[in-house]
Amino acid sequence: MRLVNERNEVPDSTDSLIHLAKSGDATAFERLVAGHYRFIYKAAFRWIGNQSDAEDVTQTVCLRLPDALAGFNGRSKFTSWLYRVTLNAVRDLQRKNQRGTRLVDAVSVVSRTEADATQEQALRVNDIWRIVRQLPEKQRDAILLVFGEEMSQAEAAAIMGCKEVTVSWHIHNARKSLKDLL
Amino acid sequence: MSEADRDHLQLLSEVRVPEPDPEVMKAVIAQSREAFEIRKGRSVAKRWLGAPPRIAFRWLVPAAAGAFAVLAVMLFGPTLLNSPKPGGMGDSRVADAPADSNTAPTLSREADAPGTRFGAQGTQGRQGQQIDPQSLPMSVFTGEDIRIGFRLTPESMLLYLPDVAPDTPVDSQGLLPGEEVEILAAFALPAEGVVAIRIRVDDARFWRVYTATDGVFTREPELSALISDALDQAEATQRLLNQ
View: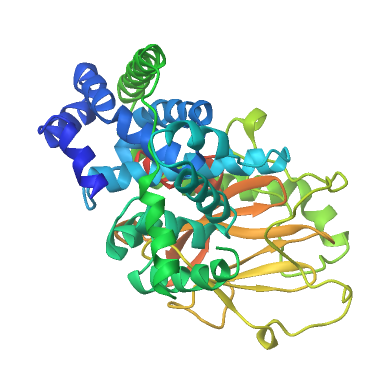
């Protein structure tokens, strides 16, 4: 699972770094941010599909972390909590973009990154991403977490702040919506 | 869902993510550390200035609220007695302002911008009619450790805690015709006896905080103002816990 793999890229002392950072150790905090920068960026990119916006979201999250970290109580995995903070920042950006009538358009970026796949397959992936990103928010979140991030429904529920059965329900509804579109 | 559709969704995991720009990455990490050090400096100054914040908060806020209430009654009592009755049950049409009013979210009263509209609106075309809120269907928003019920009338959104008092609204948000309202987030801090709800009314987003007294939840204006402009649950929680 991608989430777990990326967590393994982080130094194995994440818990110690969090503890030290909470007690005011700036070096530990910097290491914590550096260790999770790619995690935040990649999550944001998958959600937005645009490198520049993903970097903006990553910057927002990193600048929120000094304050937000105090609210991390260790009841969930740090990466799950961080994912939720990232998702909130993504949503804020998406709402801002929607207000400005700028629609998310990942097609060109995804096309470049899929250069080594077959042309037909790349176009198909682009299409699916484009359609899924236009689903209602909760349905889109559930689909992207479970299918895009390959999380279990329980992990997706932890990040979305709802019950597992609610995730199933959103996926069910999303599938109905997608049936005619895919 | 057919097997073909399932395969389509599984393709979602195949998108490749480009590496982040290393220069941007270095700069952002340095900015983040700088923000951390600034925050650390603020925390140290806050501790140094007086009593532990939590202790101070517990008696200072009620005392200040009491003094303010007495003063308000003395100053405005006669005026209020002569003023017309409010239309609803004390509907708020604006958010509780945070301490820094320059950053306070305000409700836009400008004409709606064209474009896609999201969120729910109060029932249209029935303004002025008496509607029994209990006759309206209750929708439920599931937050973290809390469920929030809400009913939309033509003039307001009534908020409920269905697991605590399903029939009694804890609060209401007044709505102007055509205004959109939605609940963006909600969470509870059971140990603190606190419930927080983030609401969007058109372009304005704000938090409301409710605390329990004798098992009855009511809005806590000071705490609502404190976290009103928090960007997310983590920030709202942090501000509440640092009181």
